[in-house]
Amino acid sequence: MLDYLSRYLLLHIAQGVLLSLGAIAFVSGREQSVSAAVYLGSCTISQAIVATRRVAA
Picture 1 (cartoon, rainbow, N blue to C red):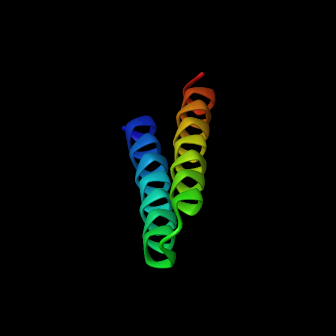
Picture 2 (picture 1 turned 180 degrees about the vertical axis):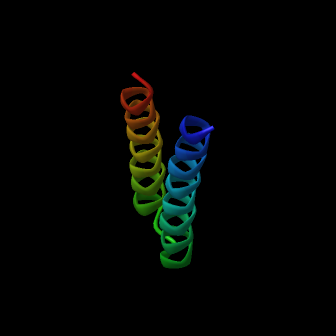
Picture 3 (picture 1 turned 90 degrees about the vertical axis):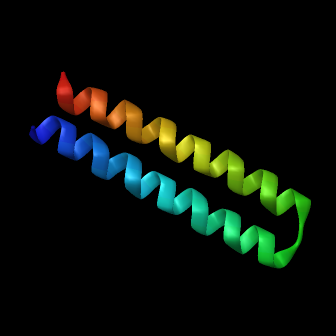
């Protein structure tokens, strides 16, 4: 239960970071900012997945 909850919270936080970065990039209207936001968001999500695997192990 706790493992599932921590995984859900980390992924939810990572998605929130991705959405906020994407919104900032969209408002600024720069394609480089959009690609950077997507890259940072994907890195954050992958780090969250790795963190949950470490917690589970």
